[in-house]
Image 1 (tube, one colour):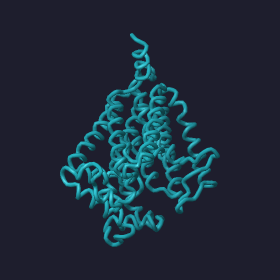
Image 2 (cartoon, one colour; image 1 turned 120 degrees about the vertical axis):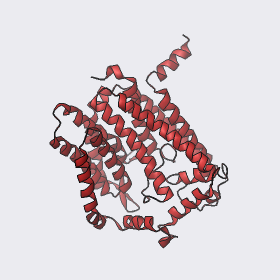
Image 3 (tube, helix red, strand yellow; image 1 turned 135 degrees about the vertical axis):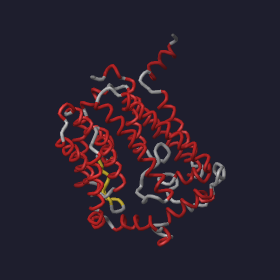
Image 4 (cartoon, one colour; image 1 turned 180 degrees about the horizontal axis):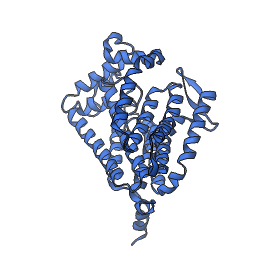
Length: 366
């Protein structure tokens, strides 16, 4: 075996080829779409390529770490995340009325992003420790572990991130075998608490909900994003207008076109056919993640793999849902497509854990 082949084997020995292929295809699609969305701005595309390389490096590093070690640091990561969220509440920077960022001297960090991984890790660790004697009390404790960071993030306020973290924790609860009676009871209680939640929401959050019901009531304000994105998607038709030919995009009618609303850019230029191929690619990545979860050898690995995969699917559903106007605008990026480094790193860190679960089966305690 030549030196180059040995190096290649070393670099890829803990990388799941199927999962990596889907990730790279989505990233490549994101770069092409971003190039058009930014009016061929090479600086933004280069920055995103750097973000992707950093995220891929982190994914590779995590994939090479046996899950025993990741499991051991689940509690420290969770506690660190809570302390950082407390730091945000006390010393965080205020931007556009929200306190979400913490300046640590050399850079700014958004601790809520860390909790997207820390919360399901912590809950999976807790359920694994109590697997033999699992009782209703354990579900209550795990729910408390989930609610604590969610409430802290809601107070920033950051509804979108709080909902995503809540969903990741719910998936852990669901995958442990939570009774359908309890799930139905929680759903009924949630519906019954809607008036209380409505009274606790900020004015801009209420406007988002009302805009969802009728975007035209504030067509130049809160409803502008939804109206312009649906026009862009509809005008794409079956085959789209062609790469860099989208009029809504390039005449600057479409807001946030490189981040939250990049799906509208893609839809306008590649149409229904392009959307179908993109969704098939997402489904392939989700399916591979669920296969890894199904083949996981321990309670911990099964729960964390399932939660990461289903949370990834939730990201996709929420972003596309808000772009096409069936969900409120909550500022959730389209995974692996939207511009941004923080969400990219968080997402690929999760995929690194998935790869570690798949590629270290003999190293995980059974």
